[in-house]
Image 1 (cartoon, rainbow, N blue to C red):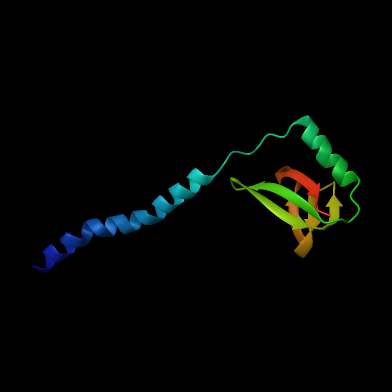
Image 2: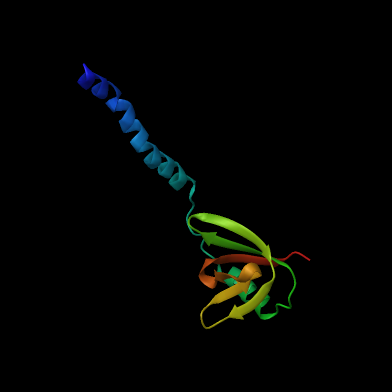
Length: 104
């Protein structure tokens, strides 16, 4: 009799184990492909960073299938290691950068 009880609930246990896979599948569907930047857009970003004077800016980055927007100040532009150092000493790599503009 106790053996039947275990078999009776086995199907529900399989569904619970698949829950994380289903959640991951939904997260993967939300992801987008990396946008391809035109030559004009890359030139615009380069010009902005060349003439940056400490103003508040809005940076758009592509990370893990999502586009995120950050409002921050840039403290350091490192052309050798190809990153920006922004508020909270967070690094934003230039390969992830897809847009930048002034807020002020």
